[in-house]
Structures are given as structure tokens and as C-alpha cells.
Image 1 (tube, rainbow, N blue to C red):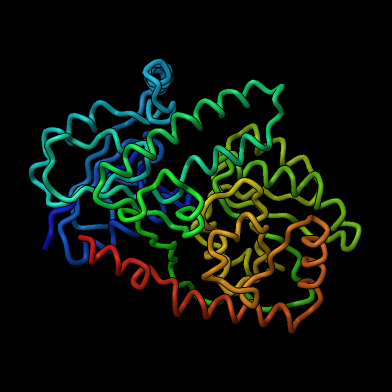
Image 2: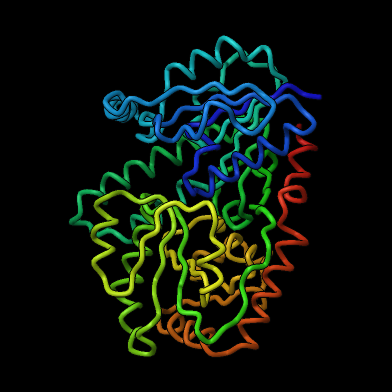
Length: 386
């Protein structure tokens, strides 16, 4: 049995639907079956699900102060560090790790922004759970922004600083974990011998979906406060949904996940759009759905939402960018992949009326999740590292 400290900038046990939170929770839960795992994290107080979380270790929680987050972001920029490392920085976590690191055999730092908490004199195993390669995400975002948009220059500067951090910390840590082989191949700043690809996994749900001609919902799940998800929803509602409604005016776009009040009000004004916010149970929506979509154009690694849809047996339509990070894992027979919007519209039309296509995708996707993507199978390499 090893003593492990898991350090995160977010509460993995929050109710917020977020791929990196779900993965962090799964890592902690899995490793705590055979090891002593403690969690230290920062978050906003409303994201603290409860004082007691569902694992056997100790839970140390420190809340963010929005004022100091803004100040720390500016300080980070002045020191030529990524603004995100300043924004999510917690002096309480820094002090906690410095004072307690000698108690642990292994420390796992969740996401690049937590790498600065690594004590210089820690002699145990140092693991960075990077998950996605942030620089790839920023690079894609920049390509979507006009040079006349001030955000272009802010993102460009952050990209330069992020790449510097990725290069430095991939040398410092014993292991860096990412979820996509594509990210490893395309990023020269990662040290190949020290970087390990451990893909996303998923909870095995009950196969809820069944083809019915009266199914009318298109499902999108994700944290809508995350810029790529927000762009994807607005793009679908403005550019895709009106064309779909000309084919069948009963079809409805359903968004599930964390969303701020402004976006909820704006998106709700559109015809045939339903905003649910966070939901614990997707059964009712899935039963009446045609498909789940992952139409992100800004995407790194592989989208967790795709696995979630498949875990209910729901047919999936994915953009090439959302899918490319796992093209060596999931095949064409499991989901539908498109590159142009007219193909997305065509696929939705097919799934609405084609029982054979819909049922085959449902069965293939669900069986793939059940056999190869359970967290138990996915995290076997983690056990060997520990």
C-alpha cells in the first residue's frame, strides 16, 4: 500500500459536469482501493458537494477568493508565467504541500496549473496528470479569433507561456500523463520517455437508448462555461438547428451541463432549444433522443462526452476535431464522424429515420465502452506507475 497525495485546482467530487473533474474523481477512487489516497484541492465554495466525499482518504479543501485570483493572474503575467497558473494558485495549497509532502510516497498533480506546487526537496514519485495538452487547445483557439480581437493577443501570449511550462515540467516530473496519443505525436515539448498515454474511461451505465421514430431530442453535454463547448452550442443553434428544423420542426436541441445565467438566457431565446443545467440522471433525455453530438471545433485529446453518450447506447455524431484524438481507439462502426456541417445535418436526418443504422451504432458503441473503456481497465497502467 502506497501513500498518495492528489493535488487539484478543482473539487473532483463536485456535481459540475466536466471531463477533467470526472477523470480526477475516477483516478482517486480507483487508486484508493489499494492505496491510502488524500486529496487537497481549491474551488469555489458552491462547488463543494459535501463535507464528506466518497473515498477513504482525507479531504483538504481551500476556497478561492475571486479578488486574489485576478491579482494573482496579473502577477503571473508580470513574472512571465501562464495566467491560468496565477488564476488558480492557492497559497494554502502551496503551504500544505510544502509542510506535508514527506508523508507521501507519490504526489499526483492534476493539470499543468498545479505543477508549481511541487516541492523541490520531494524525494517520492512525481506524477503530472496533464490530461490534455493545453498549448494545443490555445493554438486552436487563436486560429478561430480575428487579429482585430484583443483576445487574440492575450491567447497568443498565454500560448507562449504555456508551452514554456509544458517543456520545463515534462522534464521535472517522473511521469506526465495525457489522454491522447495524437497530442504526444504532435507536441515536441513533451519528453517522450517520460510521457504516458492513459486514455479516458467511463462509468458503465445501463443501455437506455432504443430507436423510435418519435424520438426528437439532440443531446449536448458539457460545461458550457468552457469556451470550446460554448462556441459549439452557439454554432449549432445559429447555423445547424434552423436547417434541421426545415426537415422536421419537432426536433429539439437539449443542453446539459454547467452554464452561467447570461448564456442560459441568451440560448433559451432560440426556437426548439432546452437548457437543463447540470443533471445527475440522463435517462429521460436519452430515451427520447436521436443522438448525442460532440461538434467542437476547438478540441484537444478526446471528448469525454462521446464516451458518456456511448455508455447509454446513444448514437454519437462527432466533428473530426473532437474525434481525432481517439481515432486509433474508436472506429467508424462505433460513431459517425463529419468534417463539414452539411454532413452533420445529413447524419442527423439518417439517424432520425434509419432504425438499422441507429441500432448498430447504439450496440457497437455500448459494447465498446463495456469491454474496453471501464475505469478499471483504463487505469491499470496507473497501478504499475504507483
